[in-house]
Length: 355
Image (cartoon, rainbow, N blue to C red; front, top):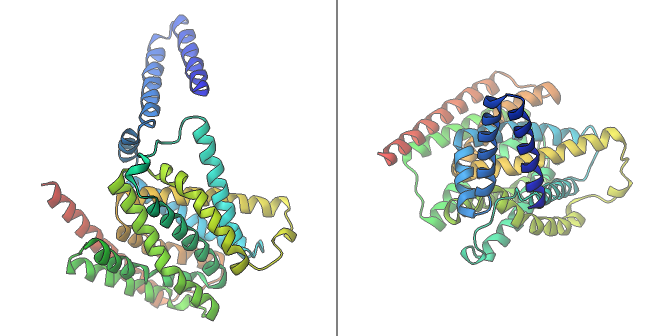
């Protein structure tokens, strides 16, 4: 609270000085801006207010756009770190990502800027524990898959996440989707499959890791979406609660999936800067993904991921010497058509619901 008072007093002193200098209009504008900031900070101190603030500031379009930009950046950055930089420790890299996330959220909490959590009794601890575990598996195995597979094969494995989510939501939540949406998702998956087929480099161990990653990835998205929409968690509050659990299980995964010798890595300024940028993007990816899942649904988030595939394939061509041909271009166009159809159907459903 002391930090907040110091900031408020500093702003007020500036307003008073501006007022005495005859800048009445500017002082009033700064005063209104200060009141808006204070009201937003006050909203963070109750979980209902924090949830409303997140919905007001980060709607579906903002959240999905934010997640899209960060996701493209981190896959390219992680491929750079795991490849050209030579940091051959994908689980340790994930551990660094979550450690930096926890540090940044600790700073937000120290300045009373971390959103409040719902009452502990309102959410079963088993749900938080399950989310922390699947986060460690989902993100850790994703980086191992990115290390062992080509960018195309990494994206190809994501196709299987879509039907896994649809099946899991039907089994556990009795959530059904229309046959038109099923058709749209099929077109998306087929288009992505064709678009990525020229960039496939099969590796048995990498294929096993990619297969093992599918179920944790689907469960991770479902839990994030469900906990935010059903239990009124905000993205940052849920990250704060589950990150320590994720870090604990990542430590357990390191001896099994990381090669030995992490401490002997050459930590020069160039390598450290690349790893630090990867960690910053990792925090932004986790945050933006949570915002997107809270604002939309697990299936919509996966469809966005397939859209990212088209952009990532282009990035792979420019940065990693992949060679897409005419079939990849046709596949990307087909996938974009399926995504457009799915988006149109979602918007139509939302419009009918509101009416």
